[in-house]
Length: 391
Image 1: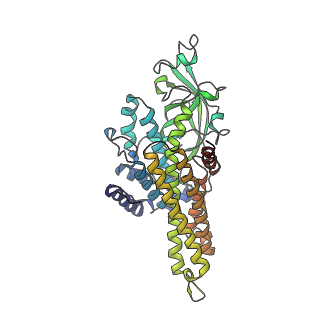
Image 2 (image 1 turned 180 degrees about the vertical axis):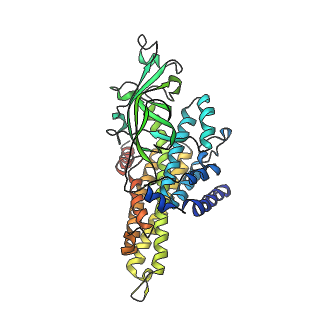
């Protein structure tokens, strides 16, 4: 698929930034499990922290294909950076799509500047693939609550406060975030009461819990968030009561295109490193790329990378014209599984060296796996695809 001049310019800009800034201290960030804040500041200087924000609030307001390209190029350098940005963009997209004008004016310009960082709190310890089972509750505390029916109470966004209690898990940017897009039930026993809220990170009663010690994506802070009688104004409700899951799934469809793009970036990096190594490494008197076994591996890897990119960019184009969950699911499923396969073969081509931290393919191998899990596992993506076939 051909890119426009503007898309090529953005792609080249991000590639240069990745080469000069992102890829410099990746191993140190990974080893120390520390997010590179200087890289984040660089993203903000390029306005990339405002990718999905309308221009009137200072953002770039890029199309879905451009968003996909940025995610791919950042993941080529460091998946943790791409993941942090994509989750930040989930948060800005929620405010853009569901927030009031007051929410947009207050939060979006600052988020374009890079601070506050956004987080997206949907999953819980007992509710991952089925978020309808969440137990986090946001109870409306107002004078009208005792005398009005729940649907009547929620009609006024600006009366009273919501009191939030519960625990969220697997929260990217959990430590770094300044604002959290939270999904909670207004009635803990009613699965249809899931609602979306905007919660400032510094509100009393909100604590950052355990930071996960992960296999890969180690520079990305992944934590639990604990809500203990957290109070927010009722006007911080972003959706009507009970419309939270629909909103989440809509936003996550675009997010899955981003994850597919990131999987392509990791796979491309693993492939490029493997080609370079296979040309330099000699065995039995010639470069190993000239041995059929290695050449065929590289042929399969290149095919997987290109197929993933085409499927992902097709999904980006389709979701630019409306929400198309099936194309996003196919792209994420195929690209993420392909990234794992490509990274696995990259380690194999490098032999014993590939199993050491002296070569980046070891990190690609660890990082690639998460793309099959977060923002909907491969099994969930296949469920979405199969369900569409029964209609």
